[in-house]
Image (cartoon, rainbow, N blue to C red):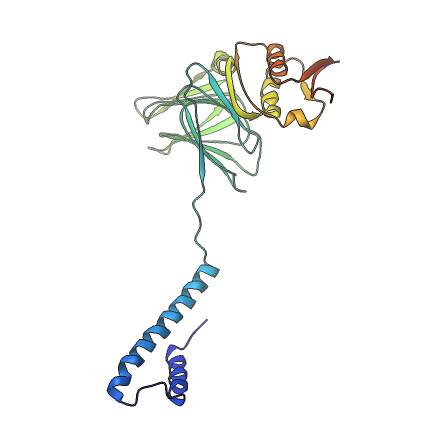
Length: 277
């Protein structure tokens, strides 16, 4: 879009002259004309600026949220908006966007955590630490990251690609394998142990978490699937802590603490809201 400033000014000047709004003395008229030229220029700049903002809007920085586990000896368990579960150990911090975009799911981790990533072949999940970038599609694995010189990744299920930032060296880690960052900036593989994963679920803490998200976590270690009889109880947000409890004990604690009912129905445990009085 092109705007002829001189033509616009000449048209305005002619109209002002016809209406005798200009001074008769040429010397006196010049300051007024100069002011009007400046005013016209400012108007044109405002119009152009508005068009630029209209067609080329500034991209806003994505707002990040942070989860920090500051409670000793407990694992803070949270479910992200894509359904992935994160188990943060004491002192660990996770930063993540409110919503993952359509192309990628990316978070930043400081400390130690277990990830249970919901599979999505169209949106890889990236975890950035101080020393590495970890890429997955859907898997379960743990990460220990304490500074640029300390990194360990153990895969329980699936396949994970790890890239060192310093050297761009990549390593594929399969289920049952652990990779560690050595002092020579190399990644070294070894076999994992079950203890590397079970320790995260022994003492779990949930803060303002939906009950259906909590039950989803418990179902991963329960012999009998736990289901809901109604959506009312499933959507409750609660705070609860478990300390070496069995899945059955966990259900008992939840139902007693939040006035819910539960019963065994065949191979399932059913949770329901109490009947209306």
